[in-house]
Image (cartoon, rainbow, N blue to C red):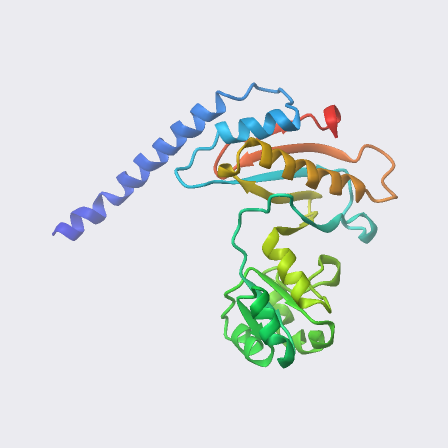
Length: 247
């Protein structure tokens, strides 16, 4: 009977939690002036003040670009080592030949190997966030290209995840190297830190990333490049940035 009563109260509990979260969000939203565009520094300060979670929220930046990603020459993509890292613990799988297994694991790879890793992926065991590979083993990954591709994990030279220098790449990723890429709608979504970083580190990471994105402007884009920039913490409200002010 106790279990039945507990089950009956689950919808009510969920409703109460939703209402509580909604109140936190509403209170956070009151701190943001409607239609105001904030400088990147101001937005970096405010994004910490409007965090709504009890856990250490991630801080994300969303950059809407005036590009047509249907054309390959307008896809904006690259990598950057954020000055203060992303704050995310990244699990790395290194697809390498046998002589590189130990160097890869010593450098910080969580998984390293080739045939054994391929078999795990085939079985649905994808216990990693990013995959890197030596150029010479890419032909072996053809059999799991679909498995990795659907999750956005297929190693790619443009993303710097197909590399002859496995140790250097692993070290850079562990230090906070992140990839940025326009999605199907021309927007870049990227984590730039944690609320616990503090305003200065969040600002410096955001500034560094935006500098890279601006430098990566496709030559064919002659008109306005950036449509909008928004900063937000996990489950927090978005803060619009005046990109013309300082970028």
